[in-house]
Length: 127
Image 1 (cartoon, one colour):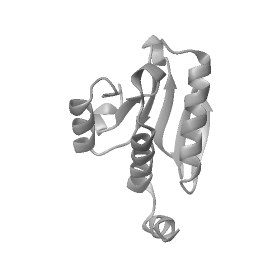
Image 2: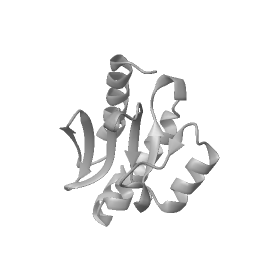
Image 3: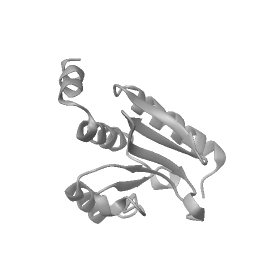
Image 4: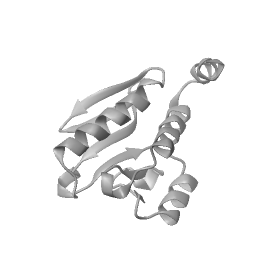
């Protein structure tokens, strides 16, 4: 089981990853953190959502990505409620699940790219 300290550490890591993505804003709501781009949610850091016991990031993804991750590593990835039918993927962030933070970073960037404008993507890629 994870602790409040683990949740704070996960939030700090996800916030740092999100901070490198232009216009991405973190919003606190009901003990969870939403990550929004131009008012559109691309990820949620959820802490024990409705008592599910999970410390996880739900992130927008293409359906094929969701299927590959959940099918390939169901101990780390899952289909989140509500948004899973739209292709989102859940990533367990508790220490026992040994999250791959490079993959979390790539998933956040992918979600950002799915929602960002072409101009924003071009500017981001130009560095």
